[in-house]
Length: 119
Image (tube, rainbow, N blue to C red; front, side, top):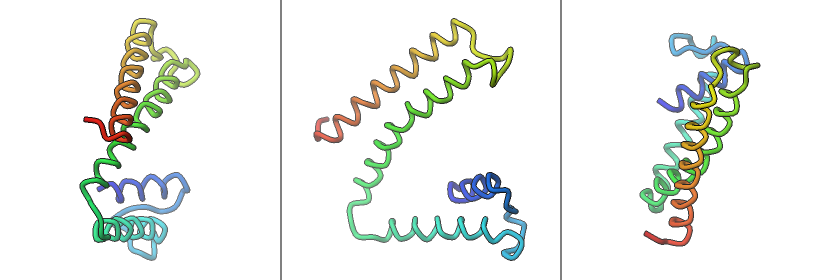
C-alpha cells in the first residue's frame, strides 16, 4: 500500500499520469516508481540479517522524524496566510505545542535507549 500511495504522490507532484487503471504505456513513471519500490522492499526482506532489528530501527527513525513533521504541521496550522480564519487559536496553539514537545521528548528518550541498549 505504501509503494502505491508513494508512487501516486510522486507522479502527481511531477504532473505525470498516474492510475492503477492506466496501462504501462499511459503511466510509465507511476508504474516504474511502484515497481522499483516493490523490488527494493523485496530485496531488503530477502537480504540476510536480523529483520526484527531492522523493523525496530526503522520505528526509531520514524520516532525521530515524527516530531519534526509535527512541528512543521503546527507551524503551518498557526499561520493565517495558510489557513486564514481557520488557523489555530491561542488555546489550541498552546495545547498543540505542549503535545509536540512531549512527543519530541519521548522520541528522544527512545532514541537514547535504542542507541545505548537501555530498556
